[in-house]
Length: 152
Image: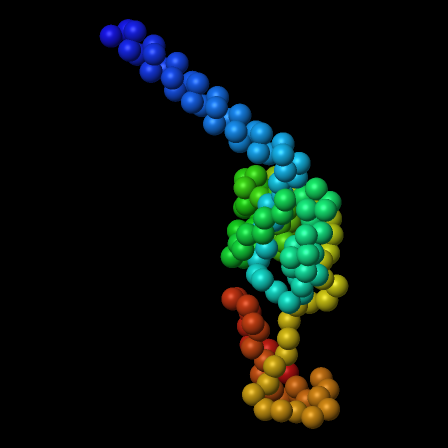
């Protein structure tokens, strides 16, 4: 009985080592550093990133980039803090919330992918030569959860 148990354990160890070796060899062959990126939304503002991915520019730089869609800045920050992702794209407010929460090891905002707010102002009616003065007396609905109506 002991002989069967020891043989089974040794067999499982050998199988585990073989699997580990195959995976390690595959990683060494690619030579790419795995980076996981969480983004809040797929956006036209990230078009340069998507073009770089599709054209293989990250691979040329030795990066195997995986992009995951994560719903909301709070979820992106949770993924960064837990180590599930390496980089998170979200507004800087997520970093500020973590810092204000007293975390010793807080994330740092280090880059801005977009220079402007990713919001659009749309209307049901065509307005030729639109100016902000056209909004006077109108109600504007924000586009995100929690936004409120603006009476201008």
